[in-house]
Length: 313
Image 1 (cartoon, rainbow, N blue to C red):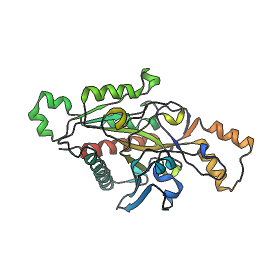
Image 2: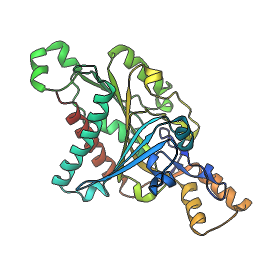
Image 3: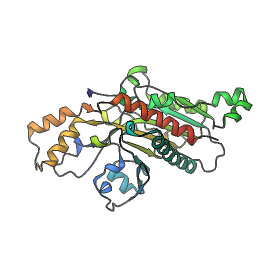
């Protein structure tokens, strides 16, 4: 599937490509930086990998400003869980994967609100629910067990549910609402006063092999829309006043990235004006998997189940 100009995903450009074509390589995954991917030491960045029964976990910690500049990402932890094609996993494998993702989110959240007992959680489903590859956030929120309203109305029932105080919103995109998503999220934060925010969004990958086969979890927040020129304010602790954990699934690859990768694999040393025009045109088009509806629905349910589990009391 190919479509033009989705609204929500954000991209970062990798540096150091031999044809000086780094402006054509777009990815949100910290684990896709070439040296990180190859297991090499990178200044200001630590990398570790772990194999589990049904997943490979790559932990990229950006420790310094130098590391942040190299990856064009804020200082923080970026944990990528790779599990292959989700629709091929059986129920036992899905439950195991859910446990893994839930544990990662729970551990990051506990570190972020270490001195807070029974933290209040606000979950944000970013993206456009009418564009399937960008609907991960809104669809995941549909499966969240919200409890904040119950706590204020029926404390006995709230205690029986054994969940944290959880609220959730889907702010949509500015093309639908006329309101920047940051403004809506900030309004919700000021009203709900959560101790932590969880932001769910679709991401971009450099490789088609990673589409809908990985989940990246980070404690550094998220910057929706920046890669397509839709510059909105980042959702992070500095802007919202509370820690922000992002949960993202790569569901798209820009067509310019696909073309550039093919040129690089062909050992092309220079980009001709004609090829450059092709690459420039490709920046506005994005490719997703052909069974997008099925995998997006399954991954959304996986994320909502993991979040419900992570914030059980």
